[in-house]
Length: 298
Image (cartoon, rainbow, N blue to C red; front, side, top):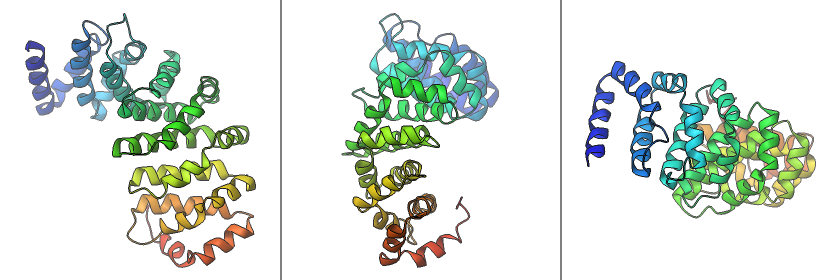
């Protein structure tokens, strides 16, 4: 009860004062992974609250939080609960999205393996957060990509995307799709491995879900898998991927989804007459022209 009341008081102080936020963030880092499972959960939850602020994220990383969070992911001395591991992944997701230096720090702390393990966690939120961090780690690092592949990450990503049966499940599937996009970008050999793992069918199915982030990241992954590969372009269309993408560029759909879907259609139709004809038949020309008016188009 004392811990709960103390956490509440610190949260209030942090919320009301930016300068106090920095002081609390720095002090909390020393407590990561220490004490009982309950203590770890309280500390990491408060750290997560603070990590939503950009200035706090800098302070948290500078104070040495990343290696401690990775230790907590690994289970520490055996006292770490699954919830504490999930919260550690949540904090790392904020930090990895903040800077490449933080991404490198996670890799240097040997964070990939425990993050891969978390992809099999019972908690869908834990799966989503782990996939989010791994997506950041594989974006610009061939070494991280190779480690993720060697640790079985591809099959786990595909498995998560295939189990899209709830709102939380769709969030995890979205992050796994984003991770596949990062993993396969500019990597023809990896494209082949991911395709052979059965990724295209569930990615195309994700386009039909009422979940903007899932649809956006599925379209991005489809574009990444199909870049330079007519075989994969045709495989996407074999599951009616072109017509589903055309529905996502219609007015009224989220602008970011429309932009990503348009980008995917550009990849799917490059030097592919069959898919070009599919877009025309699906009535895609007019909405594609309309997408040109979106400020968010890449």
